[in-house]
Length: 300
Image (spheres, one colour):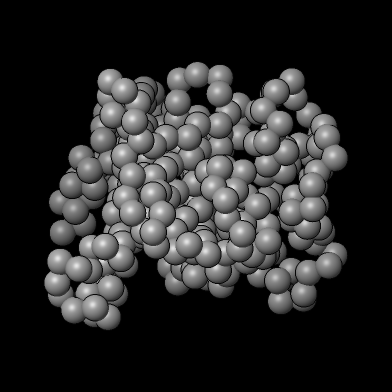
């Protein structure tokens, strides 16, 4: 299927930050993904573009670092995360982000209100939306929305904030690879087409049209174009390093789930920042934590 913008991806770190730095786009996206009556949002984090100061051509630079944090007019906060590579514990990490944000908010409340039980009544919900290139759920649904409900009756667990009852937890996932042109989901489908860089099958509304205009590379500032070119070059170098590691593993007869002699090579590539632990551990058939323990021992 043809891409709307062959030379650029909406899930690229720099591009996504440009998209979600626009409050109107972000507000509409949150309304559509979480079915919330948001009227406006404030972008708390994610509008500034950062490149990690790591080893040149490190694959770590290109792992989920969007972390957009938006606050709705009622105080509810939403984390938007983009995941372009599969990670075995991505959902665990997203949950950790939510918990960490709730804790940070509580600490701010305590500093303002004093460390009393009254602090808890000011806690606002924190929700999450994940846009992922990989599939995390074993079905054909491209959109999933989760909340905390009573097992028997399905009653939603809520908390009171600003005089309103709100879901305690909401987490939504947009799985781009599950996109189908015949999908009947009229609300989420345009966002699937936008972030999946697919041709629009219906006239996009204002927010999506605005987001699509931001993919016009020619309209960017010289600074943004230069930064994008540098990031793309570094990503290509990182991917080449990963391909080389996998080729070497195959030549040595390494099968998934078996360690047959390429351990040292993979440990060195990860230590140099040319390969990520998740790819290396997957080739060796072990968990990331097991591999990282070996990495510590190897380089003592």
